Every structure is written in C-alpha cells, then in structure tokens.
Length: 71
Image (cartoon, rainbow, N blue to C red; front, side, top):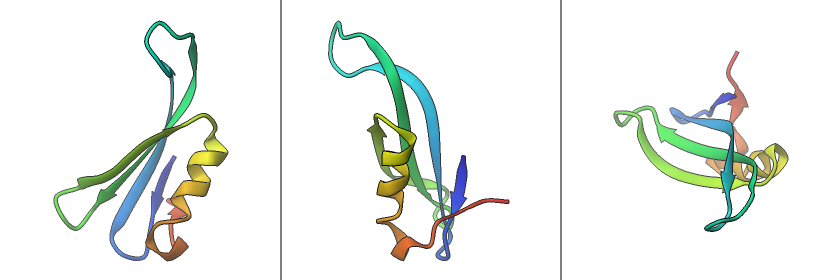
C-alpha cells in the first residue's frame, strides 16, 4: 500500500516471503520503503518486518506522523 506525507515523501509496504537466515524456512515478511519524492525518488529507508502492523507502527515514527494512505 502506498502512503504520502506532508513533506513530499512517500512510502510503500510490500508483502513478500523470505528467509530470516540462511537455510531458514520461508515466512511472511513486509518491507517498508521510504522515498524522497522531491529528490528523484531517492530511497532513504528500507526495513523488513514480520507483520504489516509492525511495519505500519515504524512508519508512524517518520515525518512527524503525517504519512497517510494515498487515495
């Protein structure tokens, strides 16, 4: 899902499946990626979480909590 903030940044939370360690089992994962829309869409943060809710909680720490779902 795509999110935008009040400062020209945007974020995406992407679902995938991956391994937490070598030879580990496949598990759900949610990748949080933040971009500076005003600077050639430069990526400035990427992190992976076990749940969508954990990724969304981390997103609230950025841009004074102004990220909102794009409509």
